[in-house]
Length: 427
Image (cartoon, rainbow, N blue to C red; front, side, top):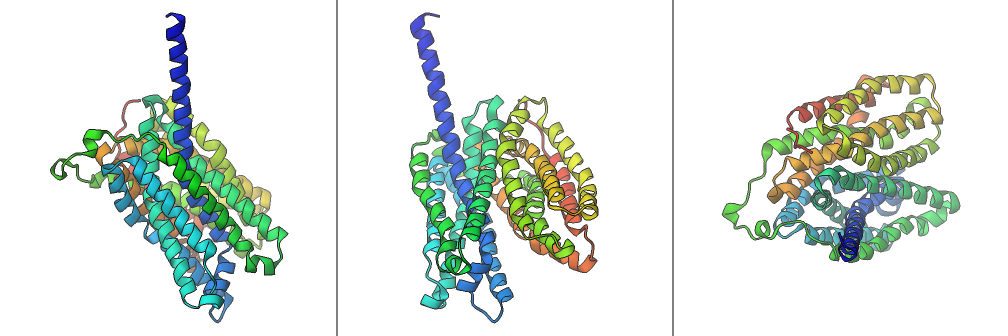
């Protein structure tokens, strides 16, 4: 090879790496914004309830605020269908531009909404509208963004690129927890009520223009011939893969929402642990996802069988659940809780990229974004968004300290059954 050709090859490789990095940042940004909003809303739910849902008791205000938060989960499947279909018909790029704008709009509505004291019942209506926009866009975001990442990669890099979608969740979770804790510690209660709680949402709003710019300059991965297919030529949604995929993702979803978000509050109620454990557990989960996901993606691209990796990680996770809760009950401390979060969320992280890629490879490109959007939205809505209510109910009727473990264990068994329904594409 002469010098000119060699120089051209190096320049092409450098350009390709830059393009991949830009794709990762642009695709992961919207998903990170979703988790950032999720985290800060969770932290300030009590304040939002007091300002926008004034009822006779603080508990009633909090419950209304949390119910409004749940509204965002309920519309996710609809967003997965509508925006996913748009991504499969018009392209991944225009769908991702749409979702980041909708997320930013929903975040801005919440951040700038006047309180009940200013405009009366219009205030809670605005909060609900903001959550509906966020939930609808989040429902389509995961399917379109993860599909773009997988389709942008070579065969031996698919899990590595998809892993950044999970890493963005971890980074946003960590930043959201740190911002919320910093504001809570540095501002008085009056300042938080007056304006402090709005700061994280305004920070999230600033991400919108950046995401819009980056996504406008993405290279689409939907082939032109699929983009222009007639209605008669379009492929129907694969019901079997959607059912199996939903089964596969609920194990990790239940683990994340129960172990990282519900468990700390549960331990405060049952073992009298300090409230600080909630923020620390969220930070630990964020660090594990942020740092561990790229490692898990590279591992999944190098092992001979992703399916065997998923089997191994799932079985180990199930075997460790009950002993982990026994350890917490026997030696209750913040250090013990953080160690359990590290191990269980770490195992969930290890299986994430391989699971996403296995699902995506089983789906036809013509319906890939729609199908994954539905799978993820259904799994997160039912088994994540309602995890706290389900586990609380199980605890009340059983009185067992191990109720959260039994819930995660049951979801993990369902995921194992879903895994058996997938064939594996050759790497």
